[in-house]
Length: 488
Ligand code: MV4
Image (cartoon, rainbow, N blue to C red):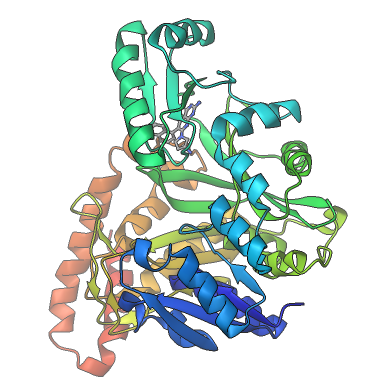
């Protein structure tokens, strides 16, 4: 096992990884930017080193600087978390050259999966159902027109270097095709450095369902079932759950085995996610995320498996601690991403100083967070401050528990999306498990429901907070918000 692990990340995921290190008795090294001197993760680590200015390019993406800290501290492994360098094949290969274990798949596998056209073609060979579409890049308009007509409109043009929705365009007929192709190619060039795009059949309101997989260094691969991540806004996931209301145990076994086969086919080591669109009872492969994901705790809650510890184990050459037959799905988990953003102003980020902060507790609650009371959220990174994950014996219990926990969660000083989550937890279609990737736009009353809920809380809060003393403030805010719900 490793002696010392460097965490090349920040915020809640850095703490999540360090917690695994503590339990495994591995010492942890944090690297942080000038904007993160007061961050919780840089305090939690056994050792912490300043690596540069706030801009990620000069700090969290600075490969040479991070490797220098690893060398000087004698770290024998690096965990990249998610985002930043997590899926950068150059970083993985630089670690490999330095003799420092990169916790994740090999640089070759990251490279292969990062190119979406190659990944599609390769995994189709492994028997994965892919969305009908092109198996090579499209460059010319005439070529695109021929292919779009073969596939049949509507189609979607996607950058090969991307993922996550950037530069995608939906095309409904030949007339729209030329501009859409140029648009996607232009965004692909500027964002991913190459103009390569491909075309797929566009599915109208699919569910986004993904399978958690784990592979060890000997080629043994298991799956940990699915998560449903259909509730997203501008390609940002907001709510995830495990399992999916749309997946039976037979279907889980079938698609889980398909995802594990895909991972085996490419020689996948570590934790990863195989993403699918699910439409009319059929799964269509989208892409593989070659990292631990933000929403991994939902799977941890229903399987009892510590995914990060397993990542570290397999990186150290040990076998996975569970066999596929031993994986059991128990109950239901839901995760809400709590972001510092203004739900009344197009969800723009609201960095700044948190005044009061109290996270919920009690049975079935997990909070992964990197913030605390009086902490100032820097403006340089993403706006997620906490993940609230609940477990229940079934979906109904998980939804009730999430509602209860959201009403206990107190964050003042910065606007945040807790009211949005409260509104979703009251939404009849959400409660019925009727989800799709266009859920938020298609639930036309959702934003008004949220506004009403916020207005009620504000009105009651003004009445009550004027008469309570400082010590009672947090309790009063929580009580007011819970009372406001009962009055609805
Ligand atoms: C699709 C799709 C429909 N059909 N692919 C968006 C994020 C990325 N992971 C994949 N995405 C999609 N891919 C096919 N073949 C629908 C989405 C999608 C979407 C696309 C454009 C604009 C908004 C969207 C919101 C959710 C999902």
